[in-house]
Each structure stands twice: as C-alpha cells, then as structure tokens.
Length: 282
Image 1 (cartoon, rainbow, N blue to C red):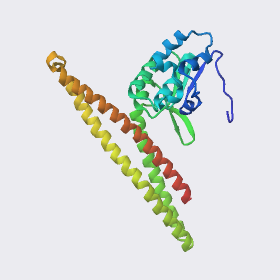
Image 2: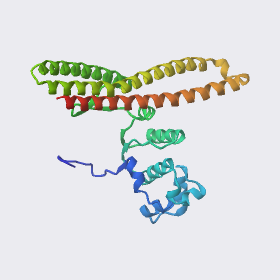
Image 3: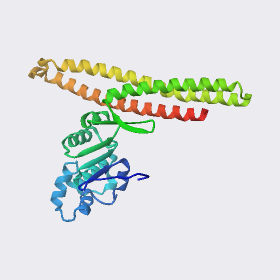
Image 4: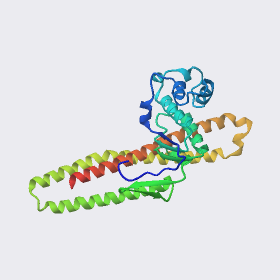
C-alpha cells in the first residue's frame, strides 16, 4: 500500500492473475512440477488429472514451460491459481493470449466460482458473462457505476463531448489571452494547437471507422439471429444450412468482441492524448 489501511477477512485466500505473472513461471519446470512445489504431498496422478482440465494432458503436463506459447503460459498461470483454491480472485486482463476456446472455458469457470471476483478487462464478452457490478474510475475517483456496458458507452461519449467542449473553451480563452502575449508566444500556441489537431485527427477517424464496423456487425448479427429463430432450420434436411449460419454467427460474435475492445482502447487513447495536449497548452 502507498497509503491507508487494508483490512481482510480472517479466512481470505487471495488469487491474483496479471499478465506479468507469465514472466514469473519457471521456464525449465513442467506444469506438474509447478504444482508439486505448491503441494509436495499431492500424487502426480491427481496433479495430472487437474492439469488436464486446463489443456495439459499427456506429455504436455511434463513439458518444460520454455516451449509453451503465450496462451499456454496463461493457462498454466490460471491453473496454478485455481489449484490453491482462492475465495477471492483478482484478474487483470485475464483473457490476453488466450484462444477463443480457453476464453470460453474461463468464462464458464468464473460463473461457477463460489467466491468473489474482481476483474479489470477489455474483453466485453467476459464482462457481460461474469460481472454483476461495475465501478467507474474517472476524475481521480472510484465509485459504483449504476448501469451496464452499453450504459458505460453512452456515459463515455457524453464525457468526451463535455471534454471536447471544455477544450474548445480553453483554446478560445488561450486565444484571447494571446492578444496580450508577445508574437513568439502566440506562434508557439498556434503550433501546439496545430499539433493537437494533427494528433487527434487519425484517432478520431479510426474511432469513427470502428463504430461503423460495430454497427454493421450488430445489424448483420441481428438479422442472423432472426433467421436462426426459424424452426424449420432445425429439421434434418436443413442441417448444412444451420451449420453455416451457426459458423457465421460465431465469426460475427468474435469480430464484434474485437471491434468493441478496439473501441475502448481507442477512446482511452484519445482521452489520454487530449489531456496531454491540453496540459501542454496550459
């Protein structure tokens, strides 16, 4: 802690997962050895059975970590946490490096988890499926957010509009003050304003393009869901058509998740850049 106090329950068992924990894995050790170090008394068979649920079956359970992909390392880090049976999970971007199958497995596992979970993530599907309470971090404060992810999108657009309005007001005030400054100061202010427009423009265009893709994807998905509601599709003769529609739905859902994650990242980048350039003008 940098300040203040932290009070914990008597029986708290904390499980913490963040991206940097992949770096803490012993590259020379196998998944079985990682768990054996935590529970020397456990049988190898019980450890291997447990690891099988995380995709480490057969020889994979005895393979050194240094040969693993990013997704496999993330799975192992999650397995190590789960093995310790925490009653509070703190997850920082847990689905980074995970493939779609493991993301789904993690979502299902969190839904069945009996303890408390705190998640920081850009993965909208994970949040929609696992979270029932949101907190808003803004303006130097943390407070409970009364709404869901679509409500947050609306709030963010309103917040950015207010920030843009304030920015215009600041630039206007700066311009008025500039009449009293010397010529060199006015030139510097104009240079900074031009720099602001130049840096913000590509991000705003990217964001607009992303929103168009999201709208198109949502429209196609809605039409697809309407087709899938047709009972005739589930008869034996329509099996191939049904499979094609289900496959297309899976692709669309994955694309939408990606566009939505990009939308959040772009809005955060835009907000950070606006604040940085605003500070430079002050």
